[in-house]
Length: 590
Image (cartoon, rainbow, N blue to C red; front, side):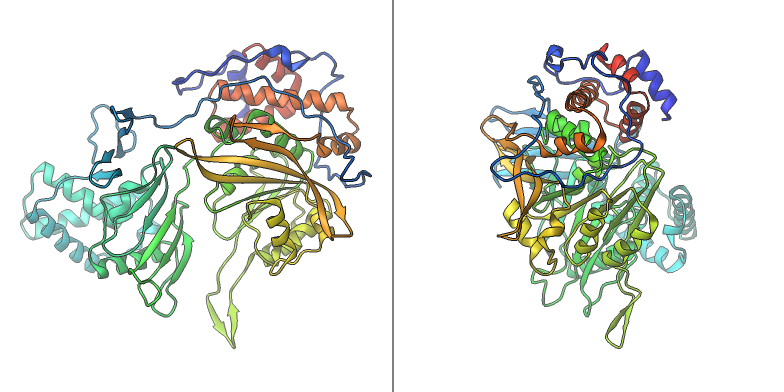
């Protein structure tokens, strides 16, 4: 969708195709001061390039000079997602199609799921239903698969999906004709489903890979049911009715996963880390003495369309005030580190923040596995490469994050994004921050003291003077809150100096999530906003008015349920180009 179409929608009133299913509370526009109009502003606020804000403000820990964060009127955030029906005991029941995901009225559903409470196991069960196979059909499918594997000598990954499907169908029915096997139309559909599932799809987990509500798929070993982590906050991790009962089948499947990742596993090298063709991240271990239950693997799925600020606001991960602050900080050249534990949503949050970057800016991203998805044309994505062999004890063909980050200096980026910081590449990243390159990155740490300890000790070993180059740290967490599995922004810290006696950076908590009220509280005045004033030439009032404008835009997008990441990015670009006009249009709709 181009900017002209988006702008037309803005002028005529944005009508998202997704119907509202939950009400959003009212907002008191008077609390915005002059945001609803243009009074008090002398013209469009323009940023012609990224501005690196040097830390030259003289302040101490007891007397921090900053700007007060503008308030945003209370808003009841509506959480999106599958609600499901509830029984008398409060347990939910869900059922929806998987293959195809969105069937038309006359289209047959080949695979679907039912999620219900099991009194036997005292837990929810994720049950996949596929076409039933009589024993005769099962034996026929196994025989056809063996014959097709012998006959076909083509790499399906090099073909388009339609071409691969037609190629497979042609050879499958040729074999049926050769052996004089006559099948009914229903039997042909069943046969076609399973052959396509196993040759072109992901085999027994193909239905799971079609479920957009699943975050993780885990196989813990032989004769252990697969577990999935469901996005519905009431479900979390639940067992499925899929299981490997044969050790050879499980080993073969892990080997196939490696092949789909363009890698290999063996008894000598049993560990696998890679990305599947759809972008999902996979970690697997081939059955050896180190995998006591047999081969195992975990697949981290990603949504087809990246999350946007609207998603995170609706899910209650972050509030409008905090998101607007991060938007403003990133737009004015601040470097942000997103920190948290495993599966806390760091990469998702990182990708969401990247949508705030102006379309004309040059972005260089560096990752171990390709997870980021940006709408920007001026974006160079780099992915590290593992060694393809060794010679004289040295890795051959390896290109790690350190190599890529070092080379990125010569590409003259406006923004640098690093998927995860965990080694010597951190030194190069922080050097780039210090030399004026705004950066985004993630790291594993769940508190500010632990984060600083990670940064100043091996293997990272950064001097405290370099850590001062970082502006903001965002902490995320996945937790169980009021009976639901949720992801929350816990707090945001500002780095404003260095304690030379302790040789540690000076920090303070700016935003903090309060579990009792489920709200994010402002804990201090913002040093970051003060720096923006000092370096941008804008007055304090102008910066605060700009802050309020961006809160208004985020609120409007949430109210209109604008989730598509391309639409969101185009709206941000339109605001950067026509701030006054966009604010006038939006103010007339809220």
